[in-house]
Image: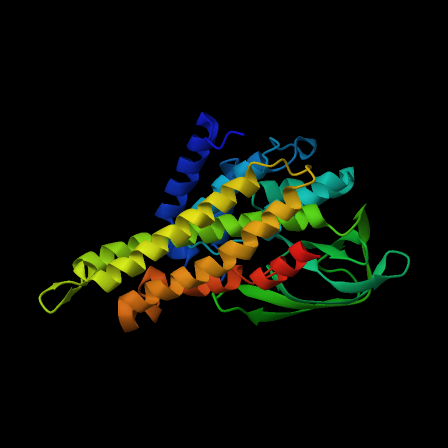
Length: 335
């Protein structure tokens, strides 16, 4: 069991971190996903191919690679379709094995030219036609195609398919989602089953983004309390503030440990799905508590868009709830 990143993984982490640091303003502007030109540039770097299966022309990156990349996205508080578009949808299509679908959808997603999405839907199918709904689907508005998990199978649905309607909604972090309705919508069956592994990979990606966001919020808060003066001294010298920072640090390290424990398991191992659920159950709650404490220690300015902590709290609130909240993860673990 080796949790030390390889030289290639360190290079990957540093490359992604530098890229996102140079584009922080566009990635966290709160006006939606990262700019299309930046997303395409990430594809040109080979990042998405690194994470996708070899059968689709990728390099076969596993959970640990996803974790490394996603943590950097979280550290930058970047609003992107990484989890649902690449780790979820593109990977599911690639593993579905349909050569035409891979060429049509995965190849453009790998270069950043197409955005994909994943919908967990309440649908029924009648001869590969779906009827039902899916609410608050991340990236649905921008997606060229969607992977739909429902009715005991995973399906591929094109954005302009007959009978599909998507009403856009704005989420708390400023990103866009869609309220989807299927009315006899034609779909291609990719795989049978409940899509547990696909969902676990998306959740792992979100867990890593949460840990990355926690790191940024903690570091920003430490720096702020060192500089903020009250009664003629830095507020970081107050014992009550030091205790708060200590609890934040412990929560961050516990979250990182659970993330690592979940990510070092092969995605095809029996314990992978449960390990990710365990990580989500803790990290989602811990991240929100840390983000709220960071805002509290910054005072009123902590809720503004001018500081990363305000944006970070909103991003954390979203990531803690999509594709299953902490309480839903605990229920699944107890089942």
